[in-house]
Length: 249
Image (cartoon, rainbow, N blue to C red; front, side, top):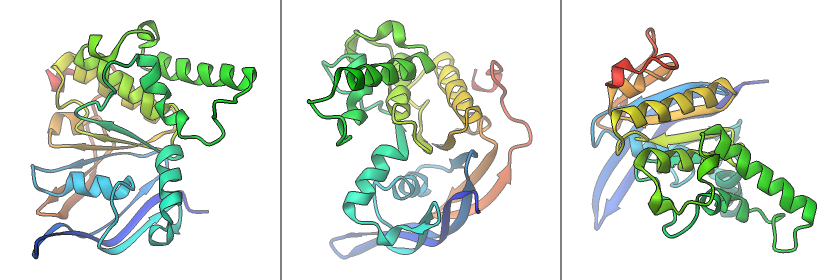
């Protein structure tokens, strides 16, 4: 049985703005194995974020093939895509995307609220289980001591760690991280990347989008993009190790 979780062939994404066509992703072909830590690198406008949106089911490709766990995604219904986004995929964004005037606990709880089985009529046992899942996710990013803090009371680094906990709460197959250190100072950026590294060691597939060479060095493989296409796909020879954040200083 194949261990590929993602496979693309001649994948393209074209935007039509009042008749003006912009090809953001051009004929991209590659695969990702389960448990890999892959960085997609490139300058602004290279197509890396658009590619992540397609891979993360936030957008559909215009042409080409995208297989997820061996299945052709063009056959997925909107309901199937929504289910995959909730159960199989976690997202971490540069801007955190936390709900304002809402507690840390409630932000991490959000993906669980989309589960049809988690309804207002939950039994006491089910409510207890949900609480354990949320606290476990917060402990994984060392934020369980901030459970009842409001999101606007947190530092940038703390907000990103909560965002990772939210991405983690449904135990997804893949975590997509789009410029996760972009709004952080060096120390907070190191902490975030080390958390992602630990999650990868625990078996999660990580796909990191970044324009920073230093950040990409945490990955085990770097796919470089330019003008919508892949220009290189290489293993990382000298990775940044846990606790070794010198490259980000």
